[in-house]
Amino acid sequence: MAHVVTDGCVNCGACAGACPVGAISEGDGKHVVDASACIDCGACEGACPTGAIKAE
Image (cartoon, rainbow, N blue to C red; front, side, top):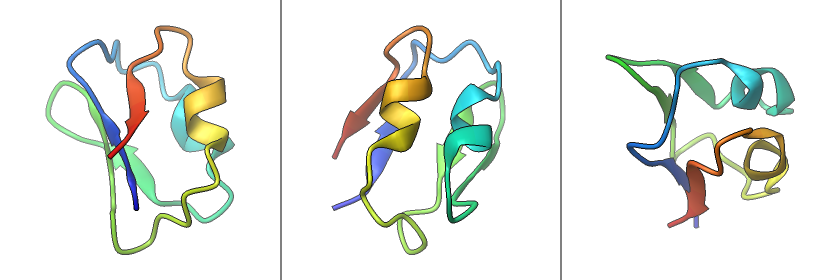
């Protein structure tokens, strides 16, 4: 089960820096999680300052 970035994302990049497998990249106005690469560790969720990342 991958994590998803919701519309609360402010595109700061904290989640991408916290992801140990590089599954998060900058998208159009917000970051996106590559579900096939995500290992569901939750590091991104804890790193997000706006709480915009949730388990899918």
